[in-house]
Each structure stands twice: as structure tokens, then as C-alpha cells.
Image (cartoon, rainbow, N blue to C red; front, side, top):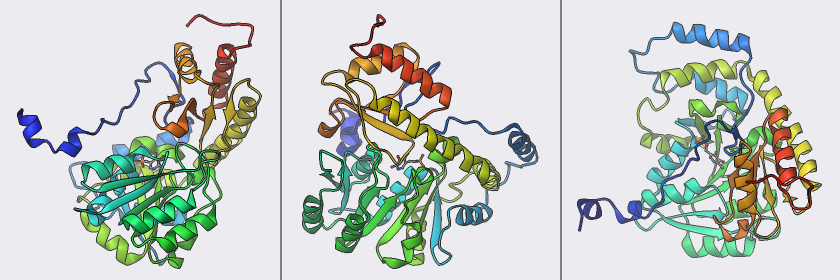
Length: 366
Ligand SMILES: *Cc1c(COP(=O)(O)O)cnc(C)c1O
């Protein structure tokens, strides 16, 4: 037995590392980033702030100013507690540390956000993934209630809207799940900027529900900042697993500045919502392509049987990177996911896709 086999935990060795595709030189429609840059005046202010910032000191361990900005920008109920993470991925890890342990279960739905399963695996939680309904990716309530009853999950994650399917689950279904769950239900609202639906205002209504948000999809993916809002008692216990100073000085000052200009980002996310509608309509017109309704900043599409891989490669050959989901889960057979980009990027994508689809006159060699 090698040293690695002897000492690296088997559940860690069994995990496939989270793969990020190389996007150099490509139009990036793969990772749900906001494609719009900061306006020049905001950049100038930012540069001045950074010039005057000392990094020889530790950051504010509680990021007080930033937390205040987040409370107001995200309309977090005043009675709720808030903790911050280095991306919401780090918060999933904190939750696993605080509520995990031998013999405990993390439950979510499939296809869903892959980090729930990965973090469960490397933190030693049992993972249970309940399949969504195949036709519209809604919650399979019978299967879910049965799984909750059988596994008594300590943690239950629902992304709302869901990634990679883009849909919102029915509010009444989510309410039933919260009521039926013995443990903590985390509503992951990573895509909140692109929908009007939210459980944030309802935090006080349930004693086992918290809401997770991130600034990544709104336009600050590079800063790595997420938050968890919920009952004070939950939050202060979970916060004990947070490493001190997890939100660095540059993130604190940059996000605080960005949030004090929230209108800039509201305009950008509104533009993305409008572009999503336009892109959806164009996809609907294409032969062999079925787009699914989305409340997020991406659109899931199903291609004709056996076409997903060729279309993905063909687009890449033409300089456009999207995400191929075919092969990642049986319900995502023949599926691709396209992040909504700028108008110009979406047009380039639509033109490239049209040329690749069978039945069009021009077939480029790939
Ligand atoms: C992108 C995403 C996250 C992670 O966001 P970070 O804050 O960048 O770590 C969490 N949940 C869902 C559903 C996501 O799609």
C-alpha cells in the first residue's frame, strides 16, 4: 500500500476533483458570470481606495461595514443573524462541519449543485440525492418525503432557482419539505438577482430554514463572497466553524464599494434578464433544440439525440465555451447549459449554433 493509499481518506481519494475548463481566448458562457464590466468612474474610486488601504493588518474579523451593506442590499430581516463566507461554497463547508459527523446525512436533489455532494463526501457525511421529476425538473414530493422520513437528514439543500436546470420549485412543495424536515433546510438563492422569488423575507416563519446568497452571480465572482442569513441561534453556532478573518481586506473594501453602487449591478442584472428572454426565444426557433424556462442567468437546452457533444465541440472550435451536461446525470441526457452573456456574445453564440445545426445550409468543418 502506498503512503497515499494508507493516509488519504478513501472518501477523498474517491472524489473526482472539481474541474474548471480552460477558457483562454474563448467567449465564456460556461460559468454563470456577469459579463458586464464596471463603469470607469467606479473603477477610479476603487483604485483610489485600494491605494489607501493597508494590508499589513488583519481584516475586520466580523466585516461589520460590509455586513451592514449586505443587510440593506439584500433586505435581510433585522431580526436575522448573518455570517459571511469566502464564497457560498465555504458556507456549505461550514454547515457540513457544524451539523455533520459520523452517521449524519446531507440530502439534496439531482440534478443539482455538485458542491453539496462533494462537500458531503470529503467531510464524511452520507449523501442522499433524490431525483427530480424527469419532464419539468420539479420536486418529486413522494420520493422526497419518503427519503426525509428514511434518512432524517441533518442538512437539506435546495437551490432556488435550481442549478443546472434553472427552474424555481413550487413554493408549496418547498414549504412542505421544510415542515417535514427534522434538520436544517438551506435555501440556496445563488440566482436571486435573476428572479423575483425569495424565501429571505420568510426567515422568521420557520425554525429550521436558513437562506444562502452569493455575490458571484450578481457580478463579483472574483471577490469570493457569500452569506448565510437565518435565526440568530443557528447562525451564531454555525459561525463558530468559520476560520478567523475568512473575508480578506480587499474583498471587504471592494464589495462594500460595489454594494454602495448597487444600482450599477441592478442595471446589469436587469440587462441579463432581458437578454435571457431574447436568447430563449431564439433557441426555441432552432431545429432540434428545446430550451427550458429559466429564472437564473443561464439556459438549459436539450439537443437532438446524440448531438450535445458535437455541438459543444463545434462551438468551442468557433471560440465559444459553454457547459456540456450530457453524461453528468441521466436526466441531463443530450443537455447543454449556456450562461447568458452580453448582447454581442449571445449573438455570436446564436450565429455559431445555427451554423452547426443539421438542416442549415452552411456546415463548417470541425
Ligand atoms: C454558483 C453557485 C454557488 C457558489 O457560489 P460561490 O459563492 O461562488 O461559491 C452556490 N450555489 C449554487 C446553486 C450555485 O450555482
